Image (cartoon, rainbow, N blue to C red; front, side):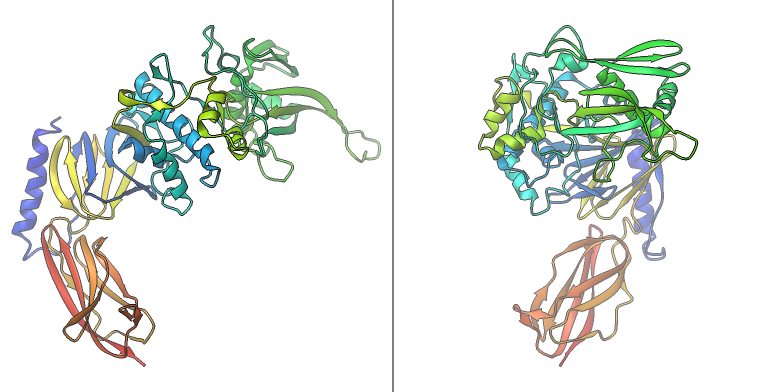
Length: 527
């Protein structure tokens, strides 16, 4: 199927029809074109794109896969790091800097390793979820607290941890409950990673430093049966611990059908996968404060004890007792590398970010990444999407299968799957704007804002200009708006003071790449 040669011809044909029929056609347009292999929306300078209620720097690309549409964000390294949402921005600055360097290093390691798994399937370098690093775009950093995160990113610009000439595998997780774990003690293997060794992590003020709950034997048996590790009745579960560097802790699961042995990390993954599916009213378990734990098994550092549950009150003639398994564990996450709450504790005690990183990564310290850091990264925001809606707060260029087909376009773009990417441009795309339904004589009391509502027939940048006599006294900033009803607000001031009573002339301006239009209305400020 031709995805390239006919792209420009099809889109230009659409635009030609628009230009020829502008006088006789209604001022709105929504024609779907495609299928294409990919469509990229490239923002103009200072323009932010929106997808799924999040704002993103960089360009957004929509591609097609066998299971739906894929949304990718091609973004600069610093802008990517600004979108990382791994720790609260209110934490001590040195802890934030340590987190930035760890995140930047993990990204560099991921890029050096090459695309794998979903990244190889869908065409991205790193995903946006906790499976990689939590990336949420620009929303959090745009808050007041986000200025502190931005400072941490910029003050450590280009710094990563390097081991043997390559980016280190800078793993990190939330909480350890007092001590991290060596890589080989969680993930196994015969080749330990020298800088991922167990170290103390005191002072963690996390709610998940220590955790405990109990589960009925029958419920646990149902979960393990669904996971295909128990046959018949569950007899007992035993956890075998090792010293640091001694290899993974293991779990022996004894049932009528025999014994299954898993590492505690494998058991954790299994329980997190099957627990909520089989017993959603039990897993994740309830914390002492009445809230639910974030996962069924929070870390690979735990023990399990079998005991018996006795009721507080024995019903007459009947004793209801049953076996339960008590889970006692420490930490949340994989426990390898830097503890985020441990870094917070160290920063609170006066340690700088270099000291924090050196502690958790066995002597590694930040250094300039140089060529180990690329300029951009492709982030997988989502895949398996049935439809995609992308908005923009300013002009964008549209690139279809590598060819630019629109420049300085305004409005939102919709995409659907149909043998490829099907694209629907904004209503009114390709048309110059007109302004309709202008109010006749808006008025407002002195000191009050005045709202003017009009209808704009094409995506445009719109503003309101206020005149008193021949003098312009105020103008609102240009703002990109979709075709449709647009509300503009004059705050009712002139030169920072309340506007004096009397008549004012309001000019509504709308402009896009195809043209400009204005509309005037006389407004009254009353006593």
